[in-house]
Image (tube, rainbow, N blue to C red; front, top):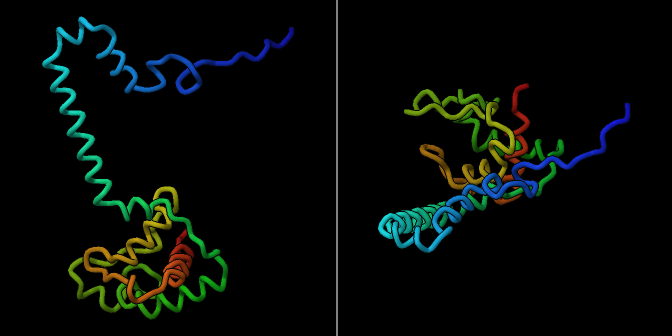
Length: 172
């Protein structure tokens, strides 16, 4: 038996059917397929158009409001995760964070019992891409709920050293 020649499989994303490649193209085709359709359904089209405009404005507003957070989601760690960086981060953690998060970052520091919300267990922070490094830095720099902001206290390189230490706390 001779093997069959390789055939290109068609499907979504490889130049296949228009309907599979983009759901928006289906809507565009549906609404613009004929001029008579547009005249017959003008009121529905106007309502749909206003819904699209409203959705676009809301998305734009949310992206402007969370612009710093969105930018942080794509930030990459410029400090290599070396033993020196982790050591510097450990010192910073003991000075700034251990009072609430505890020595091992489990959220069991001496002040944690008196707080209304227990501090996060830093050993359970998901790795990128689920929880990117830039988001962790954003939360440290800007604070969250009861956690104070450290952007005026720590330099950018110190924040990344601290992140390298926090990532080293991860349990297997």
